[in-house]
Length: 251
Ligand code: BTN
Image 1 (cartoon, rainbow, N blue to C red):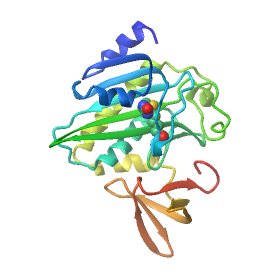
Image 2: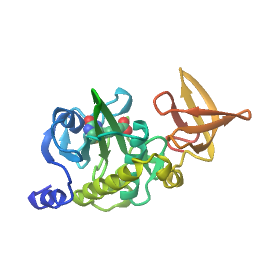
Image 3: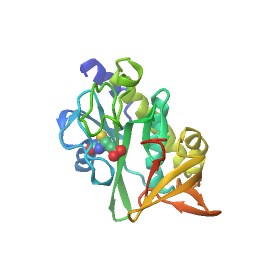
């Protein structure tokens, strides 16, 4: 991105703005700058040590968007894990045709186009939250082990993306959803559920090394997934289990 692009992004940022040509991880940078203002934005052209959920790494092929929003709430009333779902919805709002695989994989077609990693640090009574968002915007290829599962907006649509516009849009959508989220996930549950491809189908629930086919019926007011098997409903929390479609990565 050039200076004009960065100036354009800066006009939307309510906190401080940090830009890196290359950095280990924008989430790590955000946590190094916990003295920065609430709603600060950290973006990088490239990450050398990008991190994903479940201690996985996040591929740094060029053309991607790597951004972290630093939040310093005075008090947070909603459940913080549901904040990750709000970030997923922000990305899904900003990417045409995108859907969400619960809890927060953003899907285009049947492949993953974006992911969210939220990290929290508690300081006595207050806390700092780094909401990291990785979007495959203009990536032209992925490593062999990812190519069946990952796509980019460019590969899906054939159009080169204006990264500055996309970053600004995701940032603004997220701040809007964050305001709603302050009164609980329930306010955004309906919109999230409409975009969630995990719902109303049989899915594979994986926990403690066991795989079970269950029917995903709904998302509750905490952002947890309700699954049904043999007439019994279970509540599953994003930290404990993985879900997979029966027909492939997403479906
Ligand atoms: C996932 O595993 O789906 C989450 C991926 C999150 C990647 C983003 S890229 C910006 C931020 N910095 C990181 O190191 N990770 C997140």
